[in-house]
Image (cartoon, rainbow, N blue to C red; front, top):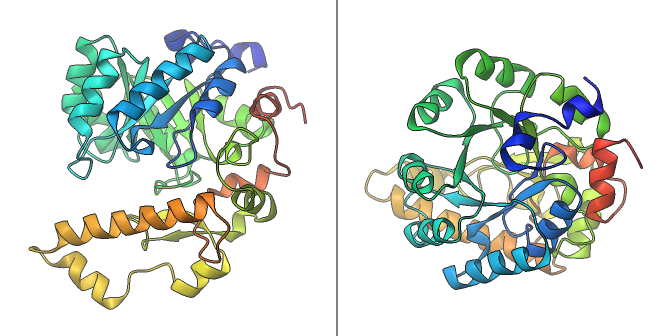
Length: 322
């Protein structure tokens, strides 16, 4: 499959974009400048609604993106009970008629129903066939197939295992998340006959990213072998760079944390506390130089050799232009 064929996939047709790439929604990292740069480079992108403290801030961001560029973009929505702003966010996204929603961590049933009434597409994060079939029956427009090469909350299967399983079991478009960082990995993934790819980690080290220079430089300096899985942040396994601080605090919950996490009466509140505490650690490390460095990233840090503008990163993926 050549570049021309790759550029005319289902995702391109669905969204009217030049290249079948979604700049993945990254907690704390994704921002307006990154999405505008990505859209102007011929791809699309999504921002986590969670990156905004209020729905008013989310509305302002949507308006700002539209003011600065003309292209499709999405919002990533946490659809479980831990997101207290879910209802407000969904209502706003639909009222603003954002092009698509990416759902994570919960049942997308209500999101799909409400979004479709507003003409908004819904792509659902999935890590296995059973859940993929469930969201397809609910009416999802596409699957975001999160594999074990993804950054953040990664899946359990490699893309070479997950994609064929989904292709055999489902009929809606598949967008693969994880493992893409350069032209070779992009071409290899697309030759599997998928609709597109979701790419995150390589965009952390972009000039448009608002995180600290220390975080960006860490993505340049560290390698895939330095990426570890931790349950200390949200209670759910999450990939981070194995900095000296991460080594110091460990990557597994201690005995007390495990007991509280398993207690029927307390686990709901403990999980909420763990999630809040973990997100605060990430936030503090992302924007300031500190020895308490907890930086989220995936194994595709191997493809990061310098801090570059997003248009340059996109070109290096779709055309192999360094």
